[in-house]
Length: 467
Image (cartoon, rainbow, N blue to C red; front, side, top):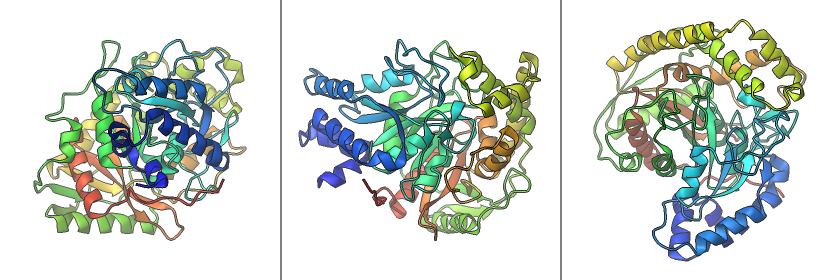
């Protein structure tokens, strides 16, 4: 394995390199920090880099006695919405100035498993949009073409992982924010079942909409990280049923033929999917059939999630803004979002959550006919950066619709869903499809995703980076 291979070896590859003694954790982290310094100038994936703190943490890993965790010595980047002790949690803006006193629970679990936090990654303020652009931290570029968007809102994390600056990073998904940037950057991005991963110290993320999880180069990397992260605490409003097996075991599960339905029909009316995304679904459906699954086109009978999604979106942004130390420092567009959402009282918010339960019942009927649903991940190709420049909330929402046309429904229902790489389009950027599973059934998603990865490997693809 060459040094360049090491940076793209992913979670399991880098963990194995440290475990074998081929490289120390400190050497690995030092190399990652050097790559960030060399390449992030063209991407703007990171808002802050821990530097000496990360090197000290890595050195401590190298002298750690006793049993070592599955992420021992592996670097990780953390999205700006998650607390990292000693660093300001900015939520992509300028409204906070006091460093967090403690890690978020998911960050604590990563460190307990041996991971080393090397920095925090860019996002739009409060994760409102599927484009990683903010007044406070600027525009993030896609490693495959820095003039194009990496998607969002976990776009900084996606760019960092796709560029080989870190082997994995944490993101959040309130309307597609793990899946969309994974689709734009050629990564595997699984949104877990609502309540699978703790939101502590908070009881929820955007009420019933948002979850936390990793963006990774491979299916196995995602499974390994989720086995570290999964599980909730008493503070969490929602919790998921325990899976039948570990997520890592699901990656290696023996083949069982499944019923897989596919559809290119968007949930959002008036949105037309790009022909290359339609082709990716057809090609993936044919591949799944060749592997031995029963695959057929279905009409998902999508319910309209608007009355459930929109009030929770407004309530989530307002809750975030209300919790800031300096609410007067939010972006003009965020102030507009808060103002437009004043009609969402606590009573309306709770009504919207109940509406989401009805939407979940209706959307779940498709799984009476199939075990998994295959769709495009996003409708349009990633736009050029700067798409949010000078636009207000309403215009930004209209621009966001093609990006969330297939993803946001499953935040309302809570179902697990994954963006799976599907090759490259004629513009040179990655393509992807979305797999959606039954409620609480991430393991089937992981099993089939791993089959696709074995048949159509993607983790070795590397963008051409410029210092």
